[in-house]
Length: 534
Image (cartoon, rainbow, N blue to C red; front, side, top):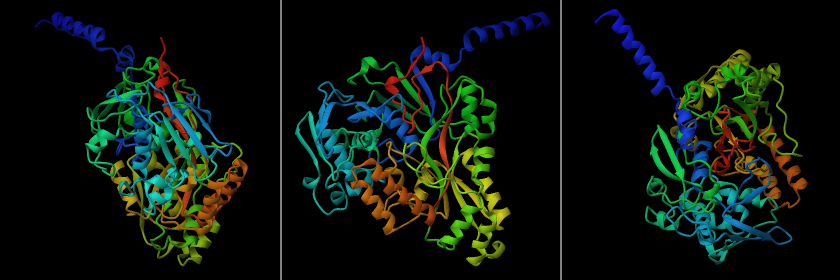
């Protein structure tokens, strides 16, 4: 073949590729009304009465809808969901919700008050083992039912007819509407669950594409493990005409650099995060945002393991950490050093500020506990779930403990589902944790540390702390509630069953053509309000 002919063929091939294969996936997806999202990791489940993590919540919020929904603009207000109206008594203790007649499940069945009652009963069923069940203890008799002390007849949930739900709470609770934005209060389709294992079954058989029946703006169409979860517009949704997107595809990309490259190469409209070492380069990029988030990054300490059962050792570990250096040199996403568990999202709440590092005091405490200069201190490991960001934070803390205390720690990572199981089984010494408020109130941030809470991985138990949390639940006045919770927060900061590191932000890369992705304190973005610019 002649040289000129070879050049001509190559040139034509390049031109053909430019004309036919050069279109980016994000461009093609916009034409089809499809949103491409990086989900960070593979969800463990999408069951609204079992899930407890952000990757799971991202999917659940597309498939199910509760009585009310989150304000797309990020305020504490709520919008009508399945409930078209509601009222409550003067004490905000008895709430009556009126369901809209057009609310339907994805199979065409009507959404009824009984569906909500069944979902809530399911969440409270002891055999199901819902980790966040205490959130539903706001309902009268819910705790006693969950603990097996009484029957369902004693729970304050009544359904006078298919469109009326009456909820009696244990105490006056003005913030109840905000609590209802938490996905555990979603309804579930009883017939589907009963046909796939029953009310206490955790196998997830009812969650498969083609089986799952939801009532949200989207319906599950694909679930390819570790590759893709796809949801498509639900034609049966009561407000389907207002839903602009035709589909959403969630990609479980754990590697932050890989996810970033997927965005830059036109395969994602939205990332779950941004690699910390790349953040300075995005400071002036209009595609980058780091919104405040109502959550805290901390290390959980297994109090059953020596010598970390000694408070002096825990305080030494805490004081040896330079939190300011971590947020300025490692995470670099506008985070704030934390001293307590409750983050900055709550107006009028007085947070515990992040303590300044005090290596001298830390060394003295460690010596007092029997480990001068770190001598004789047993080696342990920091458990993290697979993530570049978590590893870099752990490496920074590892170096600080080695330099300031003379102790040696390792780091080991696990895939998300395995990591969750390891934590729940308390098979760790120190584990990285993150907690984002499931609804906009300080209470769910602190409840996780009450005695026996399924998410209390440290095994912490303090009657004084528990009593303050109980009192805050029954205090109807917001100021009184906050003062009680502030006291509880400071007890945690004193006892240190956890070591708070920083309060979250949500760094993301966002395609500027995506509209409606406004800052959200909980990171919950109602998908029904999203669209692409014309």
